[in-house]
Length: 446
Image (cartoon, helix red, strand yellow):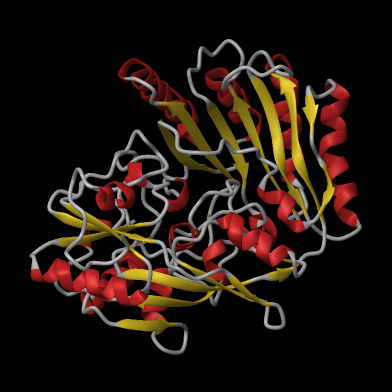
């Protein structure tokens, strides 16, 4: 059922169960009622229903950010899953993406035209949520914050009206939708700028964690002068053992674009690492643009996780030492993954045509993920996340990227005071009654 005929789903029925699904099973959505909408008209009807019944409105698509959401008591949760395909206008380098689409659909469709987007490391992430929360993607160092590539939104506002929002029609709302912290309405589609990309070098190399003390400093030293065409992540992984890696591993994954120079740039990074020790597994290779979406081999399907996120300044050798002390061999870390994502490049440069979150003033992002399989395991992951946070605190810049935030309780904030005021002014104009107030990200005021 994807219509409000007869009302939305209630706890215990199939309509409700379908609409409240989340990618993080440790963060269930618990609204008073829920419905999946398949068109802008159904989104309009859902808003009318909420207003008629005195309910607030909450919105999600895939539920990857479920652990960051505020409680939904008394709310109508609207899952957007529009019944239309992703389409690409290759001549104008633009994709139209309906709400509910995931990045696998966008990237593979664009790749048929030798085009690419700034996408995340996981194919199953929802496009709309990622873009409205900024988005720091696989090609971010070359192309900047993903939200800057949005050219227009289809939006249903609190008055139940559908509108197209772009730089010409409503520049303030357009800016606010791109990283302003949410709470502006229901996005039903985006128009996203693409860029030409015929090939790249991408993949992941894995080493036994015993080599981390040598490999991590080499990777960090390389990042100092790394070409912006290279966006990489260093990861310490302690997931389930596999045949080729019976224990924890260190992984360097990412993508390098730039035509014929891409292979040379990738070798500049990887050859010194391979000289320390032969990788247990090495998937780096030249391929089409879609391959970068799968290089990080992100686990598929819903999981039960908890985590943390920090933005860091240049960490230097001291920062590497602290990272290894709390995440490396002998640290006792229970985390499934502890990552350092290299930022800088175009990500650090303000975009005159960008939204409220148009750049990231940091050199690295830390992202930690732990299992939430049961209370004891969850508690251990939360406790160790605090240990990691304390160890990295000398390099913490004090802000976060909304698309990387793991829980609503972690310290967060991504807008300075002036931009936060601009976002609040837009909310007051388009949602004066606060119908979507529960969707405003914690820490959005800066």
